[in-house]
Amino acid sequence: MIRLNQDLEKDLDCMDVKIGLLVKNRIDVEDVVAHGRHLNRRIGKRKNPAASETMMSASDKTATRGLKALKKESREKLDAYQHLFYQLQTDPTYLAKLIFIMPQSSSTKFLDSVILTLYNFGANQREEYLLLKLFKTALEEEVRCKVEKLSDIVSGNPLVIKMIVGFYKSGSGQLVLRELLGPLIQKVLDNKDLHINTNPVEIYKQWINSKEVETGKPCGMPYNVTAEEALKYEEVKSRLNASITKLKMVTTMFLATIAKSRAKLPYGILYMAKVLYHALAKKFPGIPEKDVLKVVGNLIYYRYINSAIVAPDAFNIVDVSVESGGLNNEQRRNLGSVAKILQFAATKKGFGDESPHLTVLNPYITECHEKFKKFFLECCQVAEPEDAFNMDQYSEATLLAKPIIYISLQELHDTHVLLLEHLDAIAPDHRDPLRQLLLDLGDSPSICSLLGAAQNNPGDEDASLAHLAKTEVRAQHFLRWHEFIFLSIGMLDIDQQIRPGARDQHSRQAVCQDEAVVDDRVALHDGGQPDRVLEVQDLPRPRGLLLGPHRPPRGRKQARRAQRQHVGSYQPL
Image 1 (cartoon, rainbow, N blue to C red):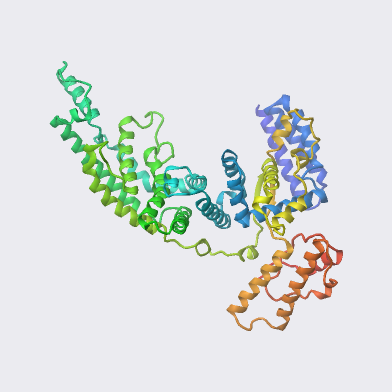
Image 2: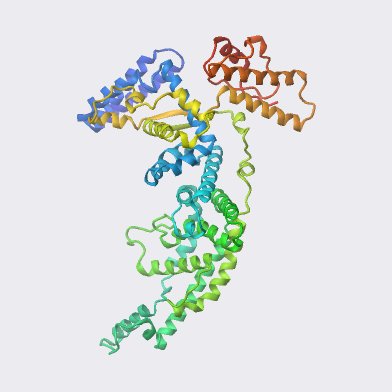
């Protein structure tokens, strides 16, 4: 085993050298590919000797065919997919509609895999900004079409809210909860003298057991009693009042921390609360603000914060060692009692006839609700993403590096199939850009065609191809050529508003010619005839932001040659 590891390390070092030589054009691509196959074969034999030969034969087939092959046709196909996913990423209406068209069982898997992958799980400001635009569009669509009354959100399980909360309960959102609630929860767990129990029957039984342990003989009192019978004993009342006092003390501590946490909560949760508030106010204009804030509180407290208090070990809010055996029943009851009062306070729900011994908590719950209501209203008062991230519709044109996503061939295939299947619903307009992008791609491909592998017989299962379907594709996002022209025109207009007279006659003439070129390009792409013949000398370089090189629509050679001369890289004025 040691010798095998040493041989693998030598092969990896050799691979690094060959990659470096490849960059300097000192060796051929075939040498690097051959060495890579040799290294993969050795690793495959080490992990699974029986399946290594089958896997390598499938890999050999995909080396010269498929979406990742070094061929012109494969590159054009990959470019077309890059345009498609860029359109889906920057225009949230398509995915927002697709989410509700699909069955809920399928949409959940689609959300967890494709959508979050498409937005790189909000890894940077651009992806988080675009992801929030999608969440906003989808949430407004869900409120408009699915919500008939406010209780539908509170008592139901709305798909978009579930998606939003699930996203922010992981990663940075989980770290926020750990930092915010971790010290308080740890303090409750470490307090061995804290016993919160508001059930009169359980208090009565604990009292009886303690008496029998002290005396060593039965006390002669009935063991099974009702809540009313248990409350007849002064000892039970005394212990209940002590528990209520401790409960109010701990709850006040949690509420004070939460009420001051607006600046610490993830911006996405706050913005979604704002979107939900305005969407409900628009859908139900006659509903009082206090009722709308209760629904907002359901999102912020119950769905996002509450579970961290009830089960801190499950959400990694506190560190619980294996030796300790996790949280005991007493600790869980203490935290559960606090979470219940906070939830009642968030929705202004009091105790009634079902728990008459706890009605003394109703004034306290009302007092806490007023603090919660003020907190929820503050959460809705956040800036729009354009201001928070300092981005707008023209920010794409100023990116120095093209955005990149990594998506598996299986996810790419599934997305293509879904778009074609529901195209009429998500893009009813026949002039929609999505239709043209799908037209460029043609019919939905099979996994085998994307891999470049031979098509199997129906019913055959090829484990190697199933494994290769998880192969990730590196997709760069960028606009089509004529879309960048439109962006440059819009940005030049903004520059003119900021600096009147800054553009001279030559710049205005260039912009007008840009518009004419776009019209001609679209006409050529749609099979029509341009209004004029494109010549290279017809395309003077504008003084605004210059355009980055991207694949033009199919057209005449003169147009492509003109584009290459006209298009450069973005530079500031």
